[in-house]
Image (cartoon, rainbow, N blue to C red; front, side, top):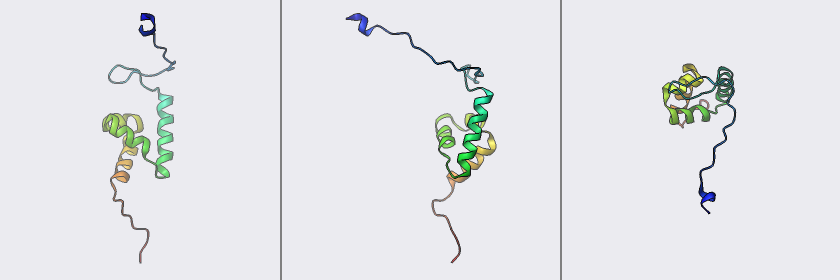
Length: 91
């Protein structure tokens, strides 16, 4: 019975050529970062800021800027901080 509750070794997937993050852990490599940035920019262009906002809320602004770039983070913050009341046209 004790065998059923014994700790099992964890299996980790291969992270490829990940670069070390500032805290010493493995983070995404340059290729993965480029893909994240391209995806986030594409989503931003159609008004979807979910990934960047979630990263901001989770990791904070400095880490989010390292991942997505300061320019995109600034644009997303402006869009997310805007009023929910938007003017479509003049009357």
